[in-house]
Image (cartoon, rainbow, N blue to C red; front, side, top):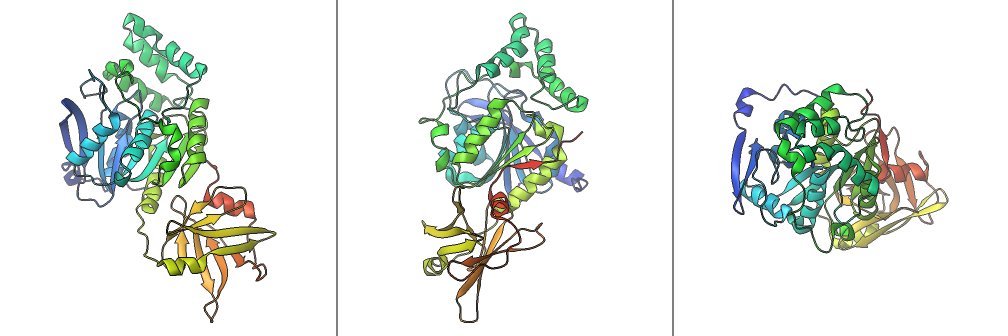
Amino acid sequence: MDFGSWSRSQALKQRHFLGQVSGVKLYYEECNAAAPIIVVLLHDGLLHSVTWDDVWAPLCAKYHVMRYDRRGYGRSEAATARFVPEEDLFQLMRLTKMDRAIIVGNSSGAGLGLDFALAHSDMTEGLFLVGPVVHGMPTSAYFLERGNRANAPLAQNDFKAAAENWSRDPYLISGPNPEARRKLFDGLVLSPQNLKTGGQFETRPSPPTVLRLAQIQAPTLVLIGDSDIADVIAYGGAIEAAVPIVSFEVWKNCGHLIQLERPAELVARLQRFAALADRREAAVSAAELRDLVGEYKFLNRRIAISLRNDRLWLGLPDTPDRPLFAASNSRFFVRTTETEFQFERDSAGKIVKLVSSTPTATKSNALAPNGSGNAPMALRLRRLSHMLSAVTIRQKCLS
């Protein structure tokens, strides 16, 4: 990946502000306001927006990007009364003239992204969630005990010792990785107030987000490091089980703060996701969509194409139905993966097969309409299911 395109002239287009939001000053940064695709970065519950330092320049080279310090973190003022975090984000997006954005969140920032998608679905282009939290899900005793142990020195106002504890945490960063651990330590030492900023003034959505995940319509990608704590893996599973347009990836030998561990790989993955989330859908008439509805044979199983709310849905055995988006009146794509489906017709206009493909596949997978006989198959049914939604193990964070 070439980060050299981040020129001095582009750097000068960065803007650093203290924005007034509901009587509180919030520090935010914005860059490349002319770019057509908008990205908002939401930090975790330990570091403030500096957690995105290593991805900021390459993202600014391509997108209109905004990041900010939430109340009480970094350079923003602390909360002194109850407030709604997703409304802070709404006000900052209005301030920076961001009508609709891909929301990138880590940890509690990912939780905020989910809350925001429910409150402002019209402003959410996609959700790119790294080690997410889901508000309304209980936290394990083990998780709480770990936090209490790390923060124990705060009782004596020993912020440096607490920062040292967190920088050695095995779940935040995988393996030795001294550079990433040093960045975590330095960020906490320079902004020790982060360690005492909690959610005591935050008003959570009601009903809780965990009960409303199925209402989220934005395409969603969940990334979790395999060294992350079990609670976070459970949060990711809940998102995958409920959100209609979702993909789940586990990155090997990564922890909770993937943006500190492998920033270049994270940028590359976000770029692929952004291209799919921003891909425009073709207009296809209801009559044309109805003509594609039916069952298609695959080996000894059936795949159903149904029509609901003016959209085609693909139903695979033993997996949730997935919405299909129109690239044309005969070609459709899955919003969270690179899988595409082509409805092919004979000379008389009759549909003869449905072909699935991905850019990395060496062969297409032909699915014949029910009753017309099996077309040639390249992969097993479970492989097609994997292309759509299954958990992916990525060899990204090998040291």
